[in-house]
Length: 256
Image 1 (cartoon, rainbow, N blue to C red):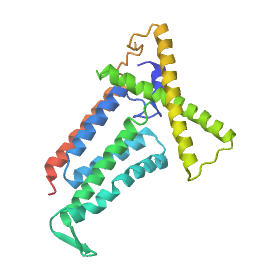
Image 2: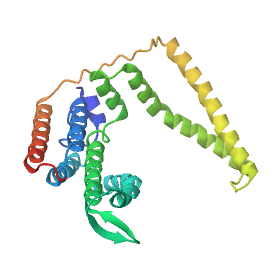
Image 3: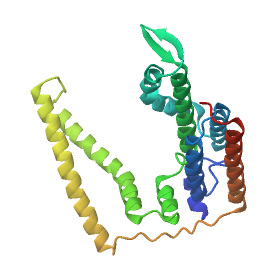
């Protein structure tokens, strides 16, 4: 892997300097192993490994944890209702509705699994530049159509955002103020419609420009992504961590 590519991977450290392909494969393997875990010691160990990876990546702790809390807000309702919907041994009663011990353990298991997997994804894949991520997927033999879709989406989300800002500026220049009225709804409908029309026109212009430059539906990557000694160390540590998780799961067995 070239030095230019390594500078785009992410923050320095053991995680940031590792080969992108190894980071993606490790993240996928960790996710499969963690989802298959049932015992709480193994799940806590998986969460601990995710935090160790977070420290190794040198990511900002506060911002990363905020992202995890955002993810938790989507599943907190499911976790709160699971003890009351899953039959089993009664743990306590709330407003006449019994909560089961099995449901409480299952909700805790889901919370630990989700947080461990999401934190590991933020650490290993979230720190990776989108272009490097696409190149790594190509080297891992992911279908080219999916990679093209990913790269074009990442590239042109910002372009569409700029177009939206220009349209909003034009509306404000005409003294438009958003209110709870039919005129506001109609104006935003025109805004979305015009945004789609301009995006379509721009995509056609970009396609014609790419064809003029000889684009035939295939990206040619100049980065060969060779493995370095530190990549082998990273791979060895990852394999040892996954084996440790599996051994702990086998040793403690299933909780329920």
